[in-house]
Image (cartoon, rainbow, N blue to C red; front, side, top):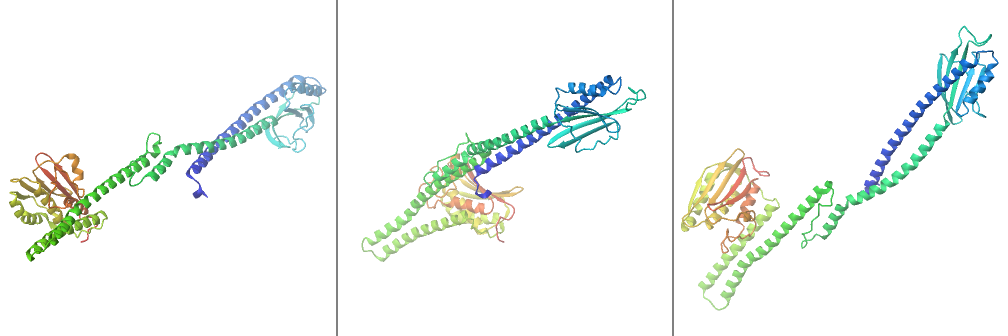
Length: 478
């Protein structure tokens, strides 16, 4: 049944049960305290009446035995304002000497309890008769060798009995009142629990409402923390952060879709234009051959762009497999510098490598990443400058940095340099032979090796730093 109850109902019932439990404990302590208080009060009252009987016995029996009725009459007068007390006096043989009781009251305990003599000078007893609880105290009063009259008993048993029905009725009324009050507390607790739950869970209902309004076109909704309880701040912040990520991802996806449409349109338009020009009139074999070469160049650029996009898609889905082996970074970088030397010489650039290190990684993927970084540096380095590849390591990482002088890139554009097709006028030229995916692929390769790729640019140089862990990349196959 619990799984079908709403969270508000569960919290209301839990709050109600908790309040009932607390109030029941308080009620139990209250009843026990009242019982203890009345018990102490009864004991003191009985002791007082016992002392009263002893005093009367000492002052009224200084004559013959005919004074017993007078003593009983005086005790009845003394008890006339105390309708719940009984005073009995018996001789050692069990004969009743004095029977002082409220008018019309029956003697308690004589019908069902034997008048056994107490084994000591004092005897306390408590019993229940016809639903009434009685408390009693019996003590012997010794006359000693000087008897009040000839033939008088040497000792008299004084027995004081208290009818506790008044206290019992009072406690019963208290219990009934507490029972009704407990019912009221239960109802009020459930209602207050329901109200508190409704107010406390209002942010969750707002979260559900916002969730229903969120769509690809409406990602700007956020939950406010102003009216939310502290316990819900963490989930609300997580929900808002998720919406931030979704909004950023959809924005990037929209920009990527626009960029990819623009980037693909260029080679496709080139193919169409070259073909239309070639078919516009009769041409000789050389003209058709030149048109086909131009179409092949555009198709190769289109195929290269598609291949790189597929590579990035596999990277984002975690499908890249790193074929790990021990790689001599100095040797690999030297091969790349030798490969790029003709292009660098053509642009009057110098290439230099400094440092060496070894790394567990995929040789082909690392060559591709460093090649992209080098081609990017060559593209944006002014003539006559030097491009440096620095290899180093520290306690837990191997670092490969590609640095080149040139126009500084504003710091606010650094995080987006690795986005696909991102163009920054100060960092990338609008017309270039590249696909705009080189830095994105380099970052994907570095991350596949468990590393990070970062950039720093100032008026002196722009530096791309790839930091690799010295251990084997996670998920790599040997």
